[in-house]
Length: 162
Image 1 (cartoon, one colour):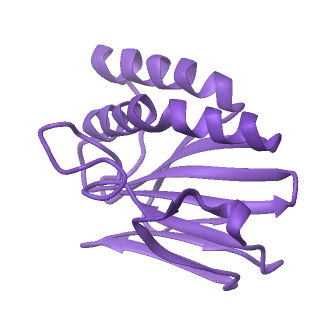
Image 2 (cartoon, one colour):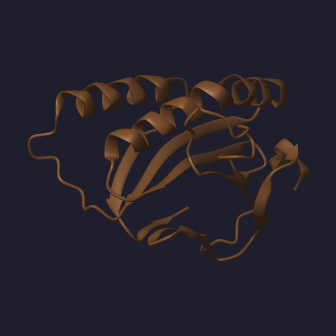
Image 3 (tube, rainbow, N blue to C red):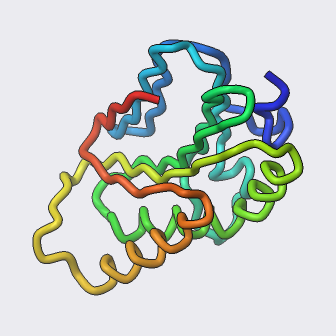
């Protein structure tokens, strides 16, 4: 499982091959269904990989080993109502961690895909989004391009198969 430690053993919140990977904060939940018992590591980003300071960052980074040569990662933000702030936190996290991630995968010749997930208590409505939200979403999607990833925002509990 050492190939899964992109950032070493530091700031690992949990790891293993569990079928259910629950992450929660206050009333917000993200649940990864790991039906094939793939190896995974969950890193604490806020106050972990990215030190606590005035910089905003997402809550967790989940990395799943699809096979020996391919990993899928998820920057995860557990948010109440402020979707714009959630996007800002994801952007800041990618800005802080993007280079080490790209360097690791290039050095180890491992294929990677990184995604962004937001679990929210405020509901998801794409009707009449404000300009700030549209710009942040566009910015985030462009930052995900090198990682071949996508952004998804869902109401809590956010449940997906990994």
